[in-house]
Amino acid sequence: MTDLQVSVVLPAYNEEETLERTVAVTLETLASFLPAGSFEVIVAEDGCDDRTPTLASRLADEDDRVRHLHSDDRLGRGGALGFAFDRAAGETLVYFDTDLATDMGHLEELVESVRSGEYDLATGSRWLPGNRAERPPERAVSSLGYNSLVRLFLRSDLQDHQCGFKAFDRVAFEALRDAVEDEHWFWDTEMLVRAQRRGFRVREFPVEWEPRGDTKVDLVRDVFGMGSQILRTWWQLSVSPRITRRVSAAAGSVLVTLALAVAVVVVFDVEAVLDAIEGADRGLLALSGLVYLVSWPLRGLRYRDILDRLGFASDTWFLTGAIFISQTGNLVFPARLGDGVRAYVVKARRGVPYPSGFASLAVERVFDLLAITALAGSVLVGLVATGGAEQVARAIAAEVPPVTVGGETVDPGAAARTALQVAAGVGGAAVLAVLAILAGARFDTDYIHRAVTAVSNDSYAEYVSGVLEQFVGDVQTVVVDRGAFARVGVGSLAIWVVDVLTAVVVFRAFGVAVTPALLATAFFAVSVGNLAKVLPLSPGGIGLYEGAFTLIVFGLTNVAAPVAFAISIVDHVVKNAVTILGGVVSMAWLNVSLTEAVEESREAEADVDGATQD
Image 1 (cartoon, rainbow, N blue to C red):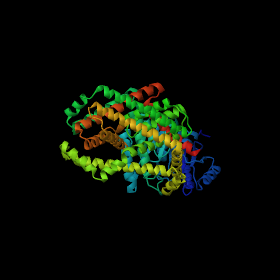
Image 2 (image 1 turned 180 degrees about the vertical axis):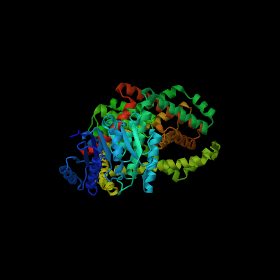
Image 3 (image 1 turned 135 degrees about the vertical axis):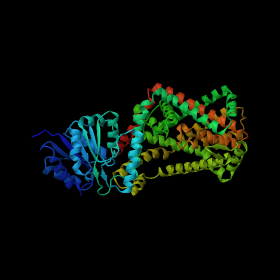
Image 4 (image 1 turned 120 degrees about the horizontal axis):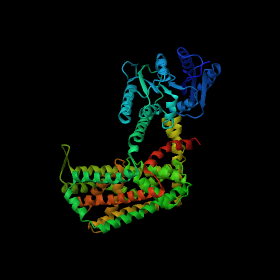
């Protein structure tokens, strides 16, 4: 009897209609070119809810070349393949889709490419010259677009990453297994990309392929999901290795300087803005930084109250440091990736699980929106509704001449009017979002399950609804507790009042007298500026904050446009400088690498998954 050399895995999810024929064809094809006893066929049955488990068990009982691996829970295609390959006996590991869309005449070429030792991985391709693949138009477009993105972002040399017809040498598989994070449709793409990066020999050859039945790929859920995985892998392979702690700390300052320099050149008189900044009182600017620093322990106290209500006790100074680090991450990285950093820090240092960590962030955002909305959202909507936006637009148009950008002339008044209307829309949306969260958190979370499963009824819908139910449940524990609600609410208002007082000190540094009207405008400008930052279009909301702040101050006061813009710049720079300095000190104190924290926060998905299954 020849030692077993080849293990073929058939990932099976609800394949009762095709499984018996697929196993028979696979055994017959393998026997045509491999010695008897040198191969096995493993049915990796992945949490099926039809007759597939029964059929797989019967096939394994009837033929000792067939094995059945069962999973009670849905592992996803990648998870099922990894689970089966870990338990396979062969040195050459093969898989293909159970619908036999790829012509089985190519199986010998696939197996022998790796079994011979010539290659470490082999994959069929539906896009190489010489193939024959009949695709419906929607599949062709999505496949071409997906593979183009993989080649562009991940620098892959392959044409087709998703063809379900692949073979791996066991040594290569084991070397790559732990590095691959995806557990579903992106799994084999990530295997191929990481294999190329590590220098493994990968063969791609054309195959004849014909779709059979309905695809199990959801073109909305899975394609967008794989898009996010492309970005995640690109970040890990191309960006993260280049980011050190020193680079992370400095990048925020560089981005601030660069963005503000561009804004000054494009919109305002550079000399007037720089003269205004040069004439500012340095002592008062230093005082504004100290005033803003007072808000950070308040943030720590508020976050302590939130975590305490969720059942996780901690100390104020540690949490203040965690917030410093996460907000520094938000300045450096786009799309508020720093939020994941805080979830990582409180998990790593205080054992707060990821679902509760992210829920605590959501609660904090809810109360931030409540405070900002109370200060400005309603007033901003009213300003636009009553025609007050026209006053701002006229004031801008009278002071700032038209600007030509890229051959197009921009009317500053019209631009201001549009910006205020957009900001009012954000303010209105913020009000509605807060009301929806507060109202929804007071009801039983089963409505989430009903809403999600009304859209989709597969196992992923169950997964998503489970995560959301736990998420909203944690939010609910704070919102329904009147004492906690009051403490966190008052703390949020205090934080934003200090934020506004910081801006008031900056106004004084520029020689602007503090009057009740100016104080009201400062509350309005700071709040609207922070509402603009709700849109994650730039790191730290750079540019968004300054633009909104300037529109409000210039439109509602007699402060000249260059001075208003200079004040917005300095106000934001002071706050970002305090944030970065606090972040650097906190990273040293807590021994946290910002880059490591960003990378480790990827564990969130696995932790949330485990919490949901429990």
